[in-house]
Length: 148
Image (cartoon, rainbow, N blue to C red; front, top):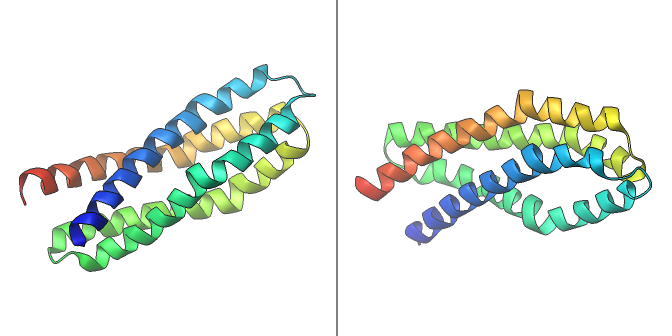
């Protein structure tokens, strides 16, 4: 069972890292080329699609991250999983408090300034978290693949 949980954990980490990079680093920057009349409908549909493909896996990953903290016996490994759990929790809180309200506004009307705000805020706060999570989890994956 622990092996399944660990496999699911790593799958979700790298799935979400890829999805977050595509959504936040690529997709946000293309929004300026969508017409103002079409944008609200586009954004509403995108948000609907992101629920099962991003938000549900992210929620599961936050829960799994905390489970991994308590399942590990090694202090060093536990610290790495604790760091991950805190980073994922911070990412989720930032998303809920800052990004979701902006996305709600964008679902109602196109606003170029809000799109630039999303890009800037993501670059300053969320992308560094995703990068840190990627590095930590690559290190953890190497440990579990080659040292266990």
